[in-house]
Length: 298
Ligand code: MN
Image (cartoon, rainbow, N blue to C red):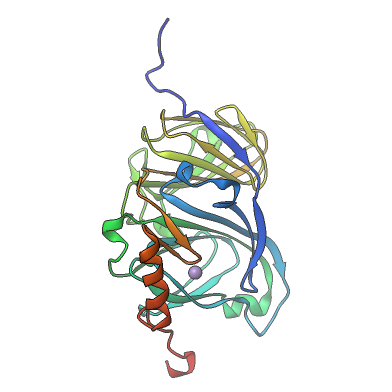
C-alpha cells in the first residue's frame, strides 16, 4: 500500500451563519465565526461577517457605522458589490469598490468609521462585502496602526486550466504569484471563482488552519458539500484541498498559521489577557486611540 505524499486536510465541519444582525445601519451581516463556537479551529482568524447581498435604495444620507475603536488585530474588508468609504484616527482614508480589499492594522488602536461611499449611496444598488478579522500575535498587538488599500488591479488573477475558473491572490502565494497584502503572520487569502463542473486541487501549508466560505454556488471541499453562505472548516493537518463545483461558485479561501496564544475578547478589542482588555477600554475612553477629525474641518 502506498501513501499519498500530500494528505488531504480533514474537514472538521460545515457551518451555516450562526447569527444575523445589522452593523450600524449599513451592513446587514451574517456571522460565521466566532458564532458557531469556532475559535481555536480558525486561528489566526477571529471573525467572519458576510454583509449582504442587500439592495439599498438611493439616499443622500450614506448608511454605515460611525466612529468606533479597534485594538489588537486587523480588519480586512473584501468588496464584491457597492463601495465603502473609510477614515480613521491614524489619518488614513480611502474608498474601496468591487474587487478591492482594505487591510487595516488596528494594532495599538484606531478609531474609524466605515460608510457606504456617498456617490454610490446616492445611486443605490446591491451591496455585498466580507469583513474578516485577523489576529495579531502579542508582540505586535501594540505596534503602530497601519493601512493598506489593495486595489483590484494590484491583486494577481490566475486563470485556471481550461477556463475552469480564476483565482485572485489577496495574501500569500499561489503558483509563484504573491498577493499584495503585507501580513504579520503567514496567511493565504484567495478569492476563487469556479465554473460549474470544475475540479480544482489546492495545496496549502501543512499546519495552517484552512476554511472555505461559499458566497455563491455549491461546492464539495474534500468531499464535504457546502452551499451559499456556508463555511467549511478544515483541521490544520494535511495540505491538500480538493474542490469540485456543482454550480458556478465564488469562494473565499482563508488559511493561516495558528498564532496559538491566549485570546481575550471584548467587542472591538482582542488581546491576550483580561487586564489588557480593561486597559483597552480605558485607553479608548480617555481618547488615547484618537478621534476622527470633523469632515468639515478638512
Ligand atoms: Mn470597524
